Amino acid sequence: MKETIFATLMLATFAIGCATPAKPKPPKPLVLRFVATTTSSKATAITTVILKKDQSVFVNGQPVELGQLAQRLESVTPDKSSPVILQADPATPYPAVAGVVELLTSAGYTNLAVAANKASAIKKKK
Image (cartoon, rainbow, N blue to C red; front, side, top):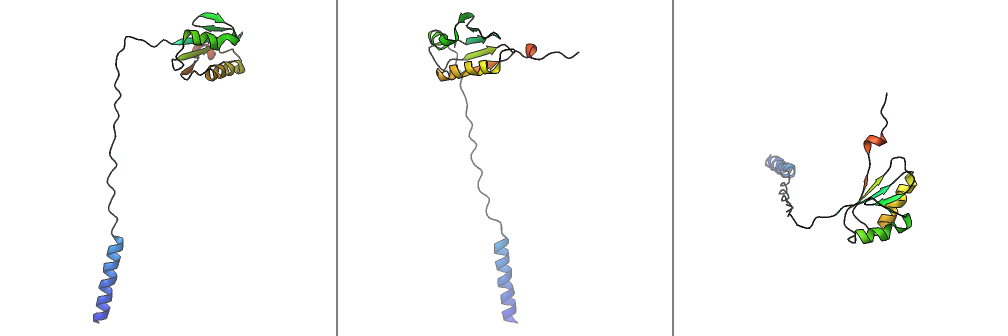
């Protein structure tokens, strides 16, 4: 009888020890990053490249040949990280737009945005 009680107590102790959940891991520390902004007297100039549906190209309103686009941008925006906005007419064929984007990225411009004119791209339903 003592052996049965001892075995039962040992089994109960073993079961309780196994059923105890592991200690929860402490939470990871929360890291907050603050971005400080400063005002500067030097403003970043934005260069605009316009691609018309006839595939004529303009840099800041001045016409330029497509083959001379990279050289014109370098004279206007020597800093390759300056923002360049490509505004393409909605009727411009996609391969022409993709070609200009490829030309700008291969020239090293890294801050490129493609602007779209939603109002002219969507036809109103009657």
